[in-house]
Length: 395
Image (cartoon, rainbow, N blue to C red; front, top):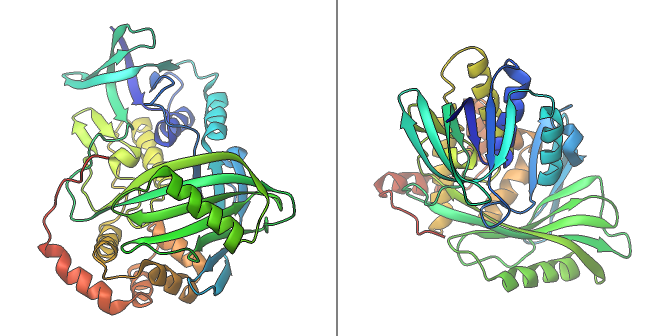
């Protein structure tokens, strides 16, 4: 049985980021096996990740575009623009990210990548055993001192509140100039709002003629695929005023937004990372930046000879505030479009982005909280402790 020091299951944002961090931080003698699902339903399609950071970043070579100006539109049409300097809002496409990491790891002697479906992971006295079915149907076993599993959970942990962020996006090309390539439409609430939750569109402009236009809902259930198409068609033509355009690509996804408690350590040597380890910010769905902090900490611990336990992805204060927001939104206490419009119109957007990264002080968090609908938030906070944690139905 082959043995490695580290086995990484899944080659999405979390798995690739951890492989990259290990390659940059740990000795070249470290043996790492990255196990990627074969082409098919277990391998996610190409997708887009967005995050923000100040200055030059580790993955700038894979960034499609970056912006320093954001805009939010209220349901009534009022526009709020802000420059987020020194931050930059960055967009990465997963295929570009994967190619960058592959180039960086090409000359790492201890790094190997294999395709296969991981069937079981079991603890052992000296680490863990990973049982894999290869693309040609053979069964193999791998021994690893540490295992980091980034596969999506088959079922979410019990939670008091779980909403789904579900979205469908088009990469569009227009005949006439239609977009401002210097400004992101972060949240445009000029779309019909659902009875419970919220809906918005966002626009990531790549040029004056091309952009990713995405329709997003926070709600308890997903829509039929054709409903997303109708919503996007109406937004592009009626709100943006673009009558003639081509759809070059599309993307679709569902992100759970939950106050569930994610288990990061499944066995003495087995850990969950990425969304499976709670990296998704419950109030927004952003995940990529948290993954970077999580994987950097793991690599640093291994380099120093410590147990590579993934750190908590979010502070207790952030989790508590997000839980109150989710409860209020799910139970009709909060008008989601009004909530975000008030925040982005009354606070510097750079500070709000730092808040979403957990990079604000207690006093700054209180100042942000006072810009929200205080009455509904307090009622939600009072009700929340009385709610039982329940399993969410499988999607």
